[in-house]
Picture 1 (spheres, rainbow, N blue to C red):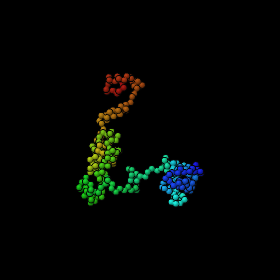
Picture 2: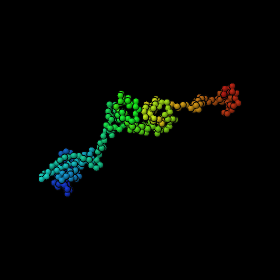
Picture 3: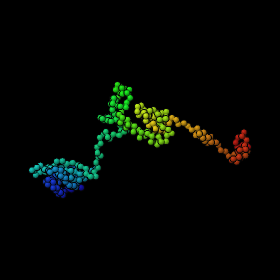
Picture 4: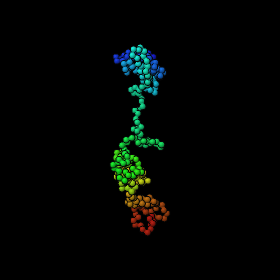
Length: 278
């Protein structure tokens, strides 16, 4: 609701009285910007000796909790109050956008799409020049300096990857690993990584495993372990069950010219005769 008769501004002792009294001037300036969306007068704030800001509620339904802030000033030894700026500002309870976060802090695993570029930040602790890696083998350093990469994983980079992999879906604490018959380290499909990470991790090469083509910890596991063999006892029981299912139960009392046998009396039958015949 637009207010036409604004109350007098409460005069503050440390502010310019003429600026504090210029409520109508401030409202007119706000109306030039917002039209009829200028609502109730909310008060005045002293910014400097000759500068104050008057606030008005906005009636725009999309800006609940916001206010029109009109800053007015008066030049020293001048009688006229002039308008410095008119802005729409959020008040307490206003819906505002979240604080801006740099892209380097916003990006998450899986955000990269085809054609996107994700540059490595200067001073990234995960990588070091190839010649500066104290844990690299001497031959590897020579290869990197001559024909290979200008930078390699640092000790921090390897530790970060190891922690992420070990605590992830291919580590030893997943339901799949806990139910596995044995660890990946004893599986023929486990291909250890080269370098220091090979002591803890490898790549699964089993097409039937849910981890095929993924890095897995040596103490991870799944049901597709290479040493899983059929249980002989289970096979024998399965064969018996199938054979039993194929039996056909016949009521011999309905067979013409045949004498019915009571269940449990077949022990005295001639083994040479078919079961169910006298």
